[in-house]
Amino acid sequence: TDCDDFALGDRVACGGAGYANHAEFIAIPKNLACNIPENVSFEDASYTTLGSIAMQGVRQANVRLGENVAVIGLGLLGQITVQLLKASGCNVVGLDIDQSLFEQAKKYGCDATYPSSTDFVKNVNAFTKGLGCDAVIITASTNSNEPMELAIQLARKKGRVVVVGAVGMNIQRSPFYQKELEITISCSYGPGRYDAFYEELGQDYPPAYVRWTENRNMQSFLELIAHGKMDVRSMTTHTFDIKNAVQAYEIITGKTQQKFLGILLKYPEIQYKNIKRTIELKKFEPKSNVKIAFLGAGTFGQTYLIPNLQKSGVDLLAVTTAEPATSQSAAKKFGFALSSTDSLEMINHKDVNAVFCATRHDTHAKFVIESIKAHKPVYVEKPLAVTFAELEEIDKAIKENDGRVMVGYNRRFSQPFVDMKKFFSERKSPMSLLYRVNAGYIPKNHWTQLPEQGGRIIGEACHFIDCMLFLTDSLPENIHAVSISTADNDMKNRDNVVITIKFSDGSVGTIQYLANGDKALPKEYCEVFCESTSAVMNDFRKLDLYRNAKQTQKTYDGRKGHLEEIFAVVDAIKQGKEMPISYEVLRAVSMATFEVEEKLDGGKF
Image (cartoon, rainbow, N blue to C red; front, side, top):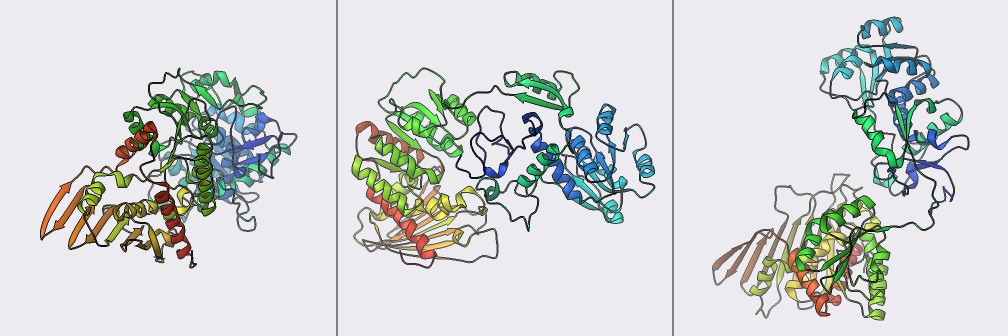
């Protein structure tokens, strides 16, 4: 671990869908893990995530000493909630349709329990001496509205209703209005949940302003167990070895009829010194002289790149992703022989002789450099690099190893752009170009917006800069860029940018990269003017050509050149030729995006 909060050998409890998976080996961001106190067993600590969910519900209820609280639903979350409420000094009444859960709830201190066969409201009213419940916490799971309707009846005037479980919410306004009830939907295990900056990047909230984050809720729950204030051990009704996990799920789904509450999965104790991160799914039988390692089989790679590689006739040798299940799924779907989570190992695999990379932006330069050093041609999705320092490292690697690199600037390979360039092929004068991009809104916390991922200019606007280099056959000479301010606090100013580029042949191009447009407007529109001749491309579906007072219109299917690009790259690899786009041009595009960023920051590049 590179995290100062933990050391090798620490016992930790962790959470987070996609991180705290049922697996022998997992990697967890620091805010989704916490140390287990010495006197708490692994078995008890395994309840930490559920306990934190229940704890957040109790915190949202804002309960006080001596208050009357009803818990609707006495399953696992409900049983934990009962204990938390008793630890908070509350009088607790539990309600459930399954009376077999009552004994357990009473063991945990529940003051009263009532089945559905009795008059809930009458009994709870008697329990509260006619006051009604100060708070009602719903931990049931059902599509029915009944838990919400019941909560409204149980709560006193100005009472509080907290929804922890997934229940029907098709409710009337008038009962809430008449009682002035507060209704709160508790979000998982606390502040920070679903915030990428908190969960993935480890940016904590100051305790003075957010006292109970999801991580601090996890710590608090473990401390309650350590101090004997929380009994989770008696909730465990079944324990299975991981190899028998199917039996556990058969009980949960009802396929095996058994009463259950908490089910634990046990893993064998293994020393993870040499973790095997690559598995062979089938024997590799080469049929081509191009044997591919594909890094990063996400949605884009599986939609636009791998299918086209299949059509090109290359051998799909290895695929890697961060998640083993994703890698194995992609390998089986497309016929890769090897499934791996170790990209560096696959780059250096003895049988791999070409690398295709579609990982997150901040890894591109690293994998490009590693591929070049391994003397293997590499195709990488844009951007080539996210910083000037990375680009310099690539420069050095190419110079020292005579490397071959291609970046996924597919638009120049599309038929509309090929036809447009041909239309102006005999020009003698500079061109005037306009490229308007209705890029669409992306939240600030989307991974592409993070500084280490380069942002949208470096990460996407590079496409349109490359298109202009393609049409002009010229490199940028001077760049100017401005952004507009927006009243939308969730939208970055540099999501709306106008870029002007003066090219070495005298051409001038303007790129309007905008996120504040309407979704109904087609995404891309390009106009070119030169020598009393004009061309207008509309979203890769239509190209209008104007010359000698005549208009010619061509129509297309909307494809953006991915297939043609892949075929051109594969051909270059097979023939040992230079890549379809020279490194000089690839580098110029990256440099242009860096200069745009610099100009938007108010500085000189």
